Amino acid sequence: MKGGSLAVRFFDQQAYPILTNKKDIVRMLLSLIPLGGTDITNAVGVAIQDAVNKPSLREYKLVVITDGEDDNIDPSVFNKAKAVFKSVKALLVGGENGIIEDNIDTIRIQELTSESLSHAIKRI
Image (tube, rainbow, N blue to C red; front, side, top):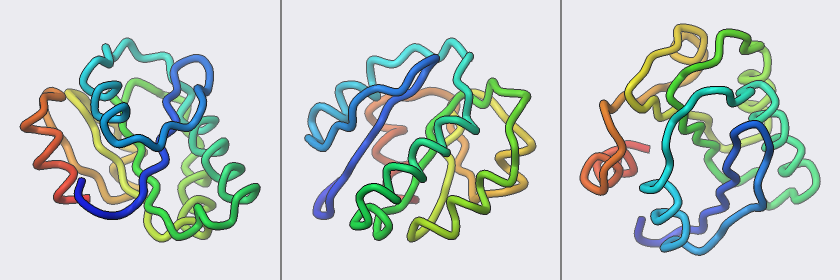
């Protein structure tokens, strides 16, 4: 995670404020407990709206980090995101989701640890 700027917004049943401090982001990622229930279509839609409201975010890569537990994803949201962001990828942690994997570049890891996170970030 050297260099570059990050803007991370966490989701479950709600959207949380954007984090930009890299240590806070890593700390938050490593403390997450995947419970499912995130509306990925809504989460990506909020990210698109963030980029519309703050055009500098359009130069960012959108990375959706999820356990894949969402059966109601509207795949068209990924096409919209690809039109807005520099790139769009998913990091699937311990799960799978055909809609995500069919529509955006996806990296799969079994569990989120500092080591797996470090390797995944290099691939993003």
